[in-house]
Image 1 (cartoon, rainbow, N blue to C red):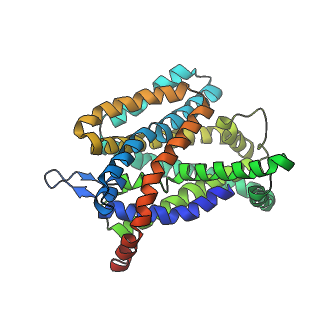
Image 2 (image 1 turned 90 degrees about the horizontal axis):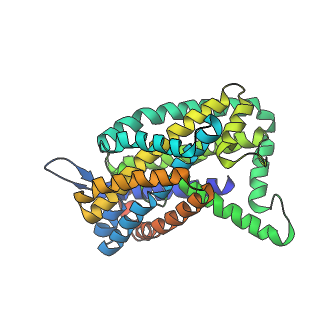
Image 3 (image 1 turned 180 degrees about the horizontal axis):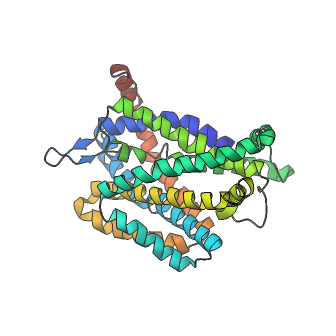
Length: 347
């Protein structure tokens, strides 16, 4: 959690820059009003490196099959199996069907679906989490102290394994922080570029996005797991850890609340990343790639749902790292453009 917070603070700056650049260098089709934007365009037109833009686009299309596809499908399938006793193949088929109904209808249907899902699930989840934290408010100071101390001091083994434990805390904290808010990946600028707004104003929505995703939602999840005492239970798999914590903190309702919110969170993420991936490959291969990519996305949904959780996470983290490299290079070089845009167009 501590390293997720650190990643979020840094990520606010990178997300702001990504969104500003995505808006500045986006392209608008004057005939039909279609908008295309994201790192591919500010790498190609701002940085002047079309080959690097192509590399980013390819990696984004591949990474979307991991971070926004297989991980989400695996999490939902695991929850359906452990909570509702639904077999993985059946759960996988259900997930594919529900996603297919939306993504095969295009970006407008994706937008309409997520605009209703996201506010509802966020308010529902935050209300439940805050209620539990207020109920266990007496142990909250200890939870925060544990988070900070465990970030630098190994919580379990000592001696030769101590450094490795701290290193792993940093590795997974940073990876999960990026996973939760996408800052540094550049992916979110693909959808932010569709907004009817100025680059700087939209950039501040990027900052708010990081704050909500990591500093609020992820923190509440972690703190609920800690204060309810379920952390470290060897009988609990990662897929049901949060649900068990909410069930203990909110008897009779908590487990169902997390189950519903988890499915909605994962569902909206799958829809959004399908758009990221198809826009990236559309940049590379043209409109002809859109439908085949959507079908490929659905195939990987099924594979992710029936696969092993640890393997799916490791593959996703690797793809995220590869995807971030060309984007971070562009952000460093184009930082002066972001500064000028902010100075010339203050809110």
